[in-house]
Amino acid sequence: METTNLDPFIEEMLYKLKSIELCSNTVGQLATHLMVTPPRAGVESSECVERYNAERNGIFDGLSERAQILADTFNGMDNVSCNSIEGSMYGFPKVEFSDKALAAAAAKGLPADSMYCLDMVNETGIMTVPGSGFGQVEGTYHFRMTNLVTPTANMMSTLDLLKNFNTDFHNRYD
Image 1 (cartoon, one colour):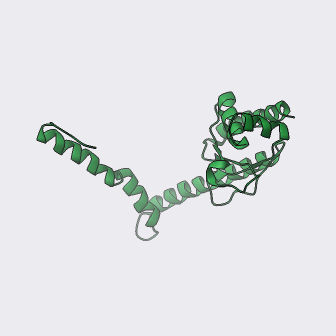
Image 2: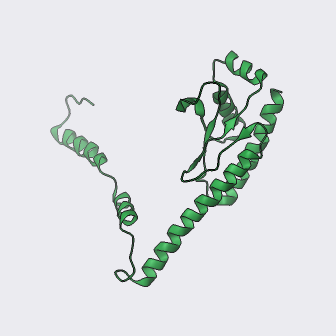
């Protein structure tokens, strides 16, 4: 950024404003500190350790549950398959497209997975990322979807929309 003809005080304040972006905020620093040095028995109170462990385990158990639900949902959909989701906050299912869908995507100048994701967001509001943005194997199509939706009940309603969209999409290009 170039500044011209600004009061030196204003320039100094702009410089300070940009400089504070170099460090994470206080909450981020505290969260990182807790992640690498969690409360320990014998050092912190047992209530603190129990609360930390319960919250941490609750987060991990929820992520694991939602990952399983996401993979099961994908694998139950027509023309979609997904490996189990382990250690990730994303599902990356593979989608098989009919020749008619591939031709429609080509006519729009898009990879088929991009057309699928654009149609999905336009019809359901669900935002996903086409696999073609990740350098997938030629001739295969994927999309990326997060499992961070909480509570799980909200994710279930989103997945119902996704299943209906997928069925409608493939029926349209059958």
